[in-house]
Length: 445
Ligand code: PHE
Image (tube, rainbow, N blue to C red; front, side, top):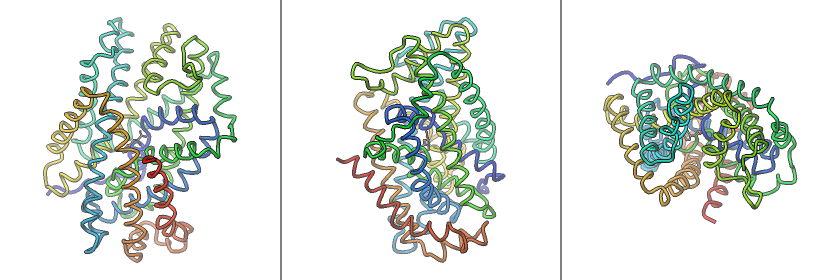
């Protein structure tokens, strides 16, 4: 069997894992949740929850992966020992299924980003924009397919020459584009109202359970937890790296970009409103999020005249990049399994599995009213938290403490004396599963 892939450096891992974490969830989901949940109060809660709840689970995943240096099924079986191997394998398979389900709907939205990016290019060179940007079924399918080809192409090229190469190129570009757009949008009339909402927290909302639960769900999805993505990426990290530090860097990047995205999208929404675009419905509620991306933003850009075409291009390229570095990490979960456990070559498995998931995306596209919301809810509100709890149980209760410490000591020999080792083990044992259980119960009630 070919040698297993590995990230070539610390920076490569940080950029790839941040690339997975930073996606449509940060750049679109986060600002919208902020705008509908008391502005800065949501940001505050989100940051605290990311560090208190999501980071410990991220660490659990990274460690399980690096310990076995294998796909999610093998990794879970390894720490499960004799008694819990069945449950471990089941958790691994379920994660794979969930990652695939998330990819199946994510690629449809990402295809929309690609279609708008292509529409802006068409506009720039004087081609008819309508061909690219219309709500037709054919357009949705073509751009979803194009997005799958990109995702599969990167994953098929391997860990270092695909995932790492593209993440290290695209992530810096993404950050640059966000900053450029923030600066430009801030100069437009109406932007200051958005900034005020973002920066002046309405702390009276902080006690609302819906705010806290929204922030919790957001933190979970945003750090790509509960599907095995971070486990697989962890399995490509060298044993000489200090994992708790790397994990904290990734969590910090994820928060940082979400906060930056808020500085872009929220002021942009208010500029749109200033230009006469409707962003709130009759009841004063913010419009549906898909309307906001695919109608409000384009109307905003077209109200800006010539510059609007460039701004639109930058915005949708930015969204497409964010989506791509996340989607490759989703596809990597089943592909790692096919190559590690089944011995199928990476190239073959990336194409076979990728096209299989695309086929499921088609089923969703043709039955969108019935399926889209169902798949999103099943994967993100049910599966992700439940698998997250299972990861905590495996690390907190099943993994032998000495073996866990030995794994942590690789790359951080002084681990026993750190604050991390004093707090984290009992934290993943009790606190994380309990809080995530609350999140899970909410989705039933
Ligand atoms: N974290 C990604 C985002 O914010 C989504 C994602 C979920 C990626 C699960 C991988 C696995 O958009």
